[in-house]
Length: 150
Image (cartoon, rainbow, N blue to C red; front, side):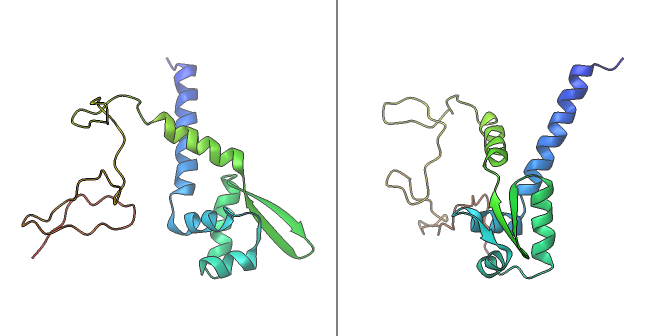
């Protein structure tokens, strides 16, 4: 017997995964970042991102299909903007995955467990070392899990 409620939940998860997949692509993230300041024509997006046609058209098509961008036509020009509600839905989905529980070993200023990760370069972030006391260089916002040295 199939449970209609669990089938619906599975379909919802599939749609959620498709939304996140649409966002989780370097070129599409670059396009969305270019649209953060507001509506832009395709030529402006191409200039800002360095993504040439037809790749830009393909990635804009994926974003349109995922309803992450809105379009407006003015003569022959097409303007794109971020679909705020859809991006907010993706944000809410991600936030729902973040537990509000304490993480053992992390302490905030009052001695309680704290799930927040310290930003690289923040005053309270402990410097990491490469084993011989040499500081590890931090890169962007990406996590570095392992480093192999020869």
